[in-house]
Length: 185
Image (spheres, rainbow, N blue to C red):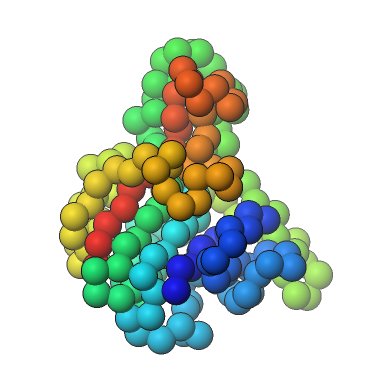
């Protein structure tokens, strides 16, 4: 089983989709910190693009623990989060704090209509560089932590924030502002 956590409107064939939002392809409408509907050691791959940053540094330990529980031994966790180092590069290049490649990745913004018709807004609660994310993953029990190239994944044809570049869509010569990391259980 392959799981796409926090998938939003992005559908990837062959994956089980989990998100709070309402889309026809969502298999489990749930917060990604609670995967109680999955058995222990049941997924060979968990993919999550630009979701982990919505949890604060204390909360993320429990989130990763839950994801670890669901992965099979030798299963792969593949995550993408805004890359703090790349955001700094964008700032140095454009010298403009209001640039789309800075405020969006740093703070995020996702309006969500709850079941009681109340609109809640979620913002990013943290940011990572490779070393901080690697340390967090090791602390959570994962091993073999490394960057991955989105171009070499089974989900490469489904554009999401793991392929976020500044300038937008400048995949040949832009700055990739997504930190793409995978780890093994």
